[in-house]
Image (cartoon, rainbow, N blue to C red; front, side, top):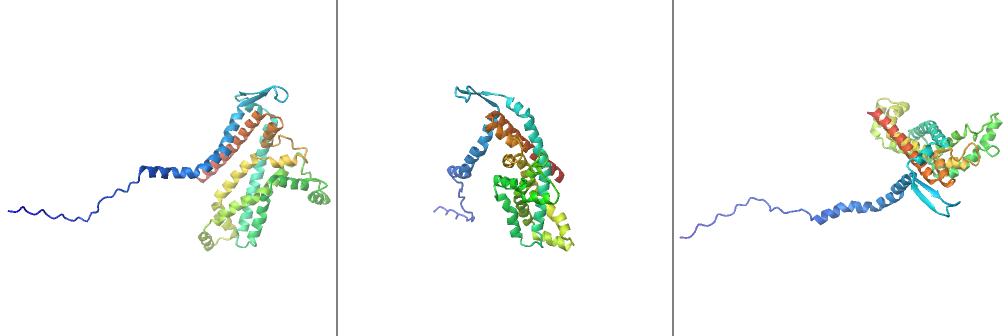
Length: 319
């Protein structure tokens, strides 16, 4: 008697499971790839940004002593603690320079932001003629180096050379653009002239990002040009205005080229007229690199604190 036949295997239609797990080596290579691509940038960033900051902070706590007239008998460095910061903040001229640029920023930054906003809104309005030409014309001063711009405006401020001064004198005015009470605002005019076009393009880029449907909806609701600018455009370009304001605050504390150049024509400007100018003078006129580094750190901290406070105020108002 033969054995019964084995039952036929039932087909379930299921496919065999195939492991698709990649080898560990491939996973490691994929994780390393972004870092390899970023490595050149990170190296340059560390060498040109992080390392100078660390070195400046280290120098601010260091005192260099030279033996001999020029240090020919030896140079020694020692840890100075907070001595350099005490000397920097104990210098009335340096403290006055900080208050001076703060006054400069309180006046110049709002004036430039308002001017930039008005120019951007006018150039992006429907009735604007030749907007591309005027955008390029307003941006052109930004392409002029600060030193050249300061030299050009120095001649426009200088009596005997300036057609502006000659014209005002012909009308019975006696302007003194380089005097102790006015030279700060003459510098403010140069800064506004140089950077208004750059900030204007940032605002224009934000305006161009507004969807066309928003304008159409506002027009359907009966909004005119002024209502459109006030209720639609200004709220939507707020991020660009905040960004340009932060840039302007930081730039205020970095004033250097303008006062350095105009010092040749204005006796009211000394070597410590602005904080950056004071740090430069401490380093290269008095060879006091420790105090110069401390002054640079104070300037950086002031820029950080002012920018942080402004951003906190803006975010609190938005919340």
